[in-house]
Image 1 (cartoon, rainbow, N blue to C red):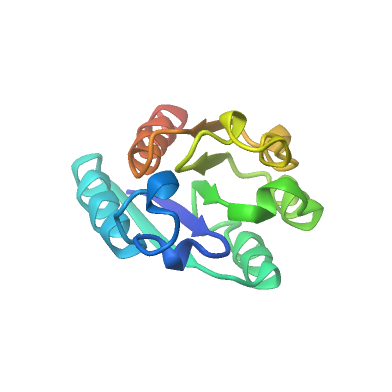
Image 2: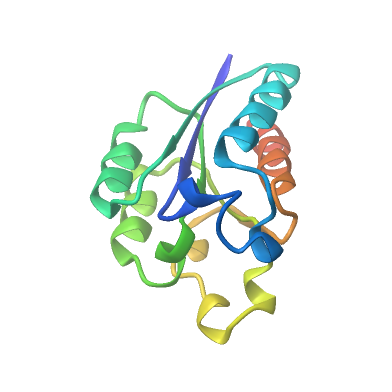
Length: 144
């Protein structure tokens, strides 16, 4: 069974509370539940984690080598400036998919630039919680 690591960055633990007009009313727990159902249907196993701490996310990426087949990451605000997360993704040489709930290219200018996307196989954004489901299907395509 293929194993996926799904990482969530800062403030995503506040989903369902913060800026519902941008991020929707679902909580991160709701999203994890939907991911679980879809992953099972696709024959995939996954681990789902969230951290507000850059170093913890980097440690999880480093630990992914040899344990996971694909990383799906919603880096939150780290998207725009964390060269450390970018370098970790590049270093582990695992196919990585960057995702976002909102369309980062249609928001404030500072949000439209991702320093992480260039080291990922692709980016999915703007589909709300379905971005996670789309990323699972993309992972399935990558893994064959």
